[in-house]
Every structure is written in structure tokens, then in C-alpha cells.
Length: 367
Image 1 (spheres, rainbow, N blue to C red):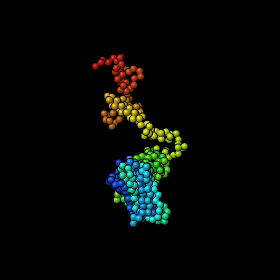
Image 2: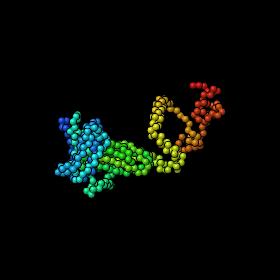
Image 3: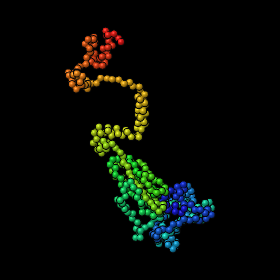
Image 4: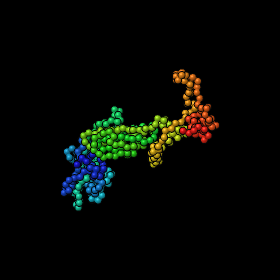
């Protein structure tokens, strides 16, 4: 399709379905043409070549015409059939001459010996000037009503590009998760570094792209490029910060040079719970814990009784006439005086009674 050369996608890979391809191999001079929305002062045309077969764009011309199709500019390029624009690099052609351009045309020259007279274009970009002859000024428009976590419609035409800029503030340096959605293709940069590129055609939804980025402490800039290939375009943005325990975040906010030793140790202990380089150690510990639990669960236990600590023992009273509500004097633990005395040091407890009964010199007859 001819519109693939103005879809905002300069990828030269044919498999990405963003490259034009003429149908008639018998046509010695195939061409591609675009009509501008209105007559415009064009300064240059940038041509992006196909990656797999760049030699097809050898010996071609660029033409610019007015609304009556009067020729305003024409330039032959690589006319001898040797060489072609490098793939993945825009080939700029300055447009010289007077008059306002309505049509831009690219066509192959009828070159003898050309094996495949097929025109393939990855992208064609037309740059213009304002009516005053100065370079058109790009201004950012503030949209405070665009809250995070919602899909917002963009005011863009077919085959157009919209750039969005967003400030992201990090209380502390660390990794945060960005969640994006787009209709259609999307690119993203954080502080000038490309972090995402997806050449796709879809309707924007929440969380279509999720990835982690490192943000330094303070303010960072996120730049989005949304390519609209059809009637409607929209985008989605949300950021999820790092979750810290309540006792860790206040310590992190303290300047490193002012942290006390216990605070440093607390941060280090928290870091060990998720540090990537310690993942093998954490897995090993988890395996050992499971092994220990399995061994501990396999041990057969036997119920037993033990004496309470002296301070926890209850006093025992003589019950007057057997009435537990009528307490008499306190009764202390001891051994029957009519029997043989216990060995020296025998405790006044259940264990003491057991030892007293099993003394070798116990004169009582075994039963």
C-alpha cells in the first residue's frame, strides 16, 4: 500500500509491513506520490530505504509540483545506477525553487539493465516552513486534565505522529515500573534514552506495555511518540513506584552521610531480601527451610506433663467440710510421714514422688 510510506514508521524491514512495494515488474519507471493537505513551502524531503533490498532504490528522482501539477523541482539521484540511500538512515533531499508544493513524487529512472524495476520505500518525510518563511515553531500544550491511569484520546489525523512529554518525580533513586498503552505504534525515551519501541497497530488499552526503568532521585523526563495509522489515536500512562516497608522509607530519605550504623544495617538487611545477586542464596535458604520443616513434621511427639514455675503455681487449701468455697489453711506439698522418708534433696513435686517410690531402699512391697 502506498500509505505505508507515510505511516510514521521508518523501519526498512519488509516483515514489519511498513514498506511499499510496486506491483508491476514490467513498469520501467514505477512511482510513488503524495498530495499535501494544502500548498506548502517545502524545505526538504527525507527518503528512508528498504533494508533487505536497498539496491532497488538506485537511480531515482524526486519531484515537487504545485496544485496544477506544474513542476517546481526535480533532482536525479544515483543516476548511474551505482549506490543507493543507506537503510536505517534518512536520505535528505533539499527542495530548491520557488512556489508552494502540493505534490511530492518519487520515481525510478528507466535504467537499462535494471533487473527489478520495483520501487520500495520505508518512509517519506516532507518538511515545510511556515507562511512567513521561518521554520515552523513546535509548542508543547499542557493538558492537566489527562490524569494518569486512564486512556486519553489524541487529536491527530490519519498517518500522523503525536509527541507527549511527561515529568516523573522520584523521591529516591530506584527502579520503577512504567505502564503504557498506545494506538497505534509507540516509542518511549526516559531522560533521552530509548526504553521502548513497538511498531504495532492496535487500540490503546491499559498496561499493553509494562517494563521497569531506573529513575534517579528527583525529576526525570518521559517522552512518548504515538503513531496514528487510522482514524483514531489514544494513549495510556501510569507509573508504579517501589514499595518500601514503613520503617525503611524514612531511613532512605536520610542523606547517606548522616545515617547511623543501625540505619545502614537496616537498609542492607532489606536489600538482601530482593537483591538479584543474592537470589541463589535466597533459593538455597528456602530449600533448607522446607527440608527442615519436612524433617520436623516427621518427628513423632509424645504428650507429657511438667511442673509450672514456682511463681506460677497455685496455692492449695484445706477445704472445710469439702466445700471449695470455704477455704482453710494452705496445704504444702510433702510425703506421707508414716512411710519411709525421701532421699535428701528430693523435690516436692510429681517427679519427686516418682523418685521416692522407685528408691532402691523403698521398704514397701511392689504391687
